[in-house]
Image (cartoon, rainbow, N blue to C red):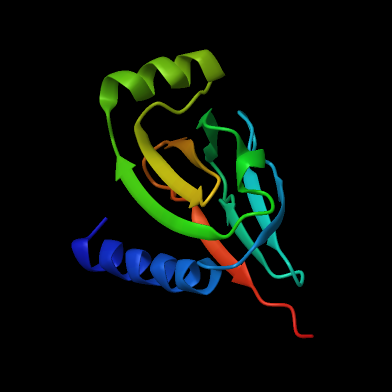
Length: 145
């Protein structure tokens, strides 16, 4: 993937994070191993969703959760950041455990979420035949009151 494309993805992700920071979390869901979608709901009903929109020959899911997602509930979200990696050895081991057929390409995506009550890191693993995206998308949904 080109550097320009990566920069555009990072900017789009950050613009969604800006909308979520400072809001009070009322609920979390999907923050467990094997999940393909994680959602943070804020007071008032707005939400931040982390997900992968599947195409064909790829899989993207949460491979590990560090911290307790419930520590975010009732607190203000102060940290939202994303880090990506292609750590070959760790990815191969995780792919083997998941029984995946596609081992040609893989991407680790770490989403770090923090409140004034605790921190959670969601480690996503995407794998494919190399043609399809392994990225985790971020979408903020505003609820009009």
